[in-house]
Length: 159
Image (cartoon, rainbow, N blue to C red):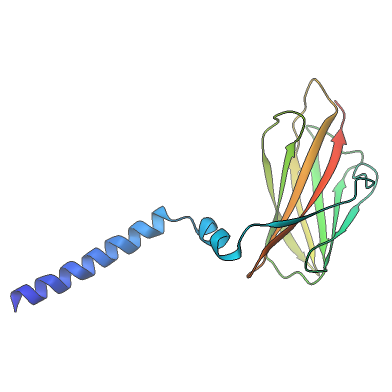
């Protein structure tokens, strides 16, 4: 009788320790990536210049995504606003990741929060470089419940 009670308590304690350990050791982002798979990106036309206009791209699910960065031309070391307009979007936020393609200027990730009607906004800042003429890649990622899709944009900044 005592042994059965001991085994039950031991099993319950082991289960609790296992669940608490899993909570702290397993990254939910990794679990989502496993569930949704790799992000599938669509690249915007090279003719589009974010320094003078907004850029639009058709995603793989046939929805439209438009990116606008203000002010224009895109400054360095000053606050910039990212605006993304997406058809039929109901996510609480999306992610924008920027990095320079011609020099390591770090990875910059910004959360863009929903303003309603498929509009997402967020603010950030890009670092400056004495070399100048940085070519930046911007990845907009939409982590939908069943898949992860995104768009890639390129733009250039001066000194």
